[in-house]
Length: 446
Image 1 (spheres, helix red, strand yellow):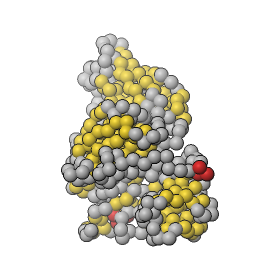
Image 2 (image 1 turned 30 degrees about the horizontal axis):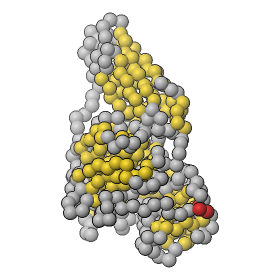
Image 3 (image 1 turned 180 degrees about the vertical axis):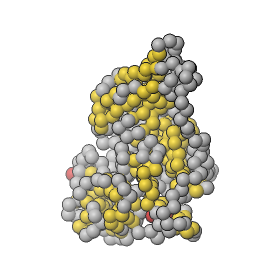
Image 4 (image 1 turned 90 degrees about the horizontal axis):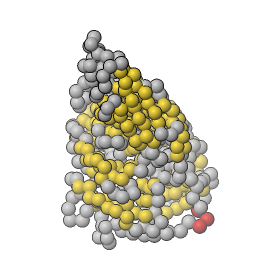
C-alpha cells in the first residue's frame, strides 16, 4: 500500500465545504400567533432498549398550528427526530435512549402564521441491561470492556457456523444483542455483502438480507432493537433486529468510500466517509435523515467513538476531532500533514486514545480540550477496563498503565492479531492460527 501526504498550515481548521444549505434563523412575522408546546412521555423510567412514546402538543390562542416538531435530547444535544404535526400534535417512539438520565424536549419550528415554541424538558431515566456488544470493540466508546462477566471456568465452544455456506467469504466484526449475533459476509463471485442474524444460543440463521455495494466492505452497529448496516458505497440501512424487516435505507451524500463501522448512540448513527476530503455524518435512527455533516481531513477507517461528551474520530497524521452531538466542532488536534488512512479511537475516563494511522505515534488526548497528555503503542484498537490499557504490540498482548507507561505485563508468542476485549477480569485475544486466549487482567497469566 502506498501513502500520500499533503502539508497543511499548522492551526488550520477545515470550515469550508459543508455539504447542504446553511441554516439561518428567521424572525417570526408580526402576524405570527404565539404558540405553546407541551411534551408528555409514556414512561419516565425504563430499561435500555425499551420503547418510550413522546407526544408533543402545540396549541395557540386561535387556529391549529401546522409544521414540524424536532425532538432533542437536551442532556447531550442529540437530534432524535423531526415529525410533522397532525391536528396540532406529533408523536415520536424510540427504544434507543442511551443509559443514564435523559432530558427530552420538543421544539415547534413555526411557520408564517404561528411562532415557534419549545416545551419544558421531560426527564427519562434509562437503566443499563444485558451484556450486549453493540458496536466495534463492544460499545460506542470502543473501549473493549464488556460489563457482564463471562464464566471462564466452563468456557467452551457452543457452535461453529459459516454463514451463507462453506464457501462464504470474509466475515465482519460481529455485534450481539437480545439473544442474536449479527455479521456480514462477503459474497462469492460478485461484489457486495450479505447480513446474517444468528441465534446466539444455536448459531442458526434467523434471517438474512443482501447489502449490495462496491467491493466487499460492510459493517454493523446496534441500538434500540435495530441493527444498522453500512456498505462501501455509503448506503446505511436499518433493519428490525428481531425480524429483518427493512425500516429505511439512506445514501450518505458527497462521499464515495466508506471503510469504517458506524456507531449508534442515543438515537443517532454516526458515520465517517471519504472520497473528496472526508465527512462525519449524524443520522437519525428514526428515519435515516442526515441531521448534520461536517468536513474532516480524509475520513478513512475511523469508526466514531461516542458518548454524551461528543463524537470522536482519528485520521492519519494525528488528525483527531471532537464534535458535539449537536454538530458543532469542539476541537481539532492536528499536525503539519494529512493523507489517506485512519483508525478507531478509544474513549474512556476523560481521555481519547488515538492511533491515527501508520506511521503516526499513538497519542493520548484530553477528551475535553484535545490537548496531548501522553503517548502509547498498539497495533490494534486497545481495550480499557477502567484500570489498565490492554494493547497489542508485535503480536503480544501487553498491559500498560492508562498513562501509556509503564508496562504491567506481557503475554504471547508473537502470533496474537485481534483487538483485545476484557470481561470479568479476563482479557481475550485471538491468534493468527485461530486460537482464542483468556489472560488474567491483573497478572497476565493464561
